Image (cartoon, rainbow, N blue to C red; front, top):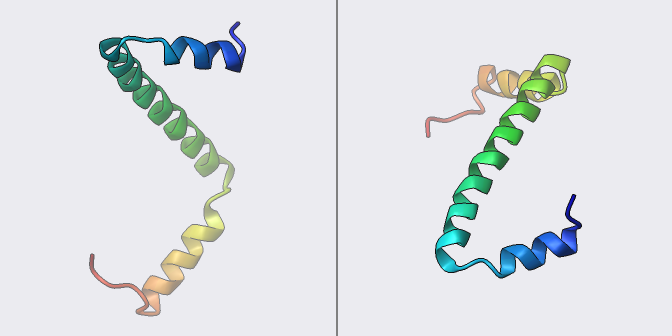
Length: 66
């Protein structure tokens, strides 16, 4: 496995076209990781307080159309 320093050096040395491809890959990779974490947080109830507060604010008329 590469160290962070080695990874930084490898990415820094990529030609422009390869860096663009890496960026696209990493964006997709990061989005999937975010989605997976969000799903896990929903399943474990970590977002319940936030959801309840938002629903309460909405019912109290503290929300507006975007």
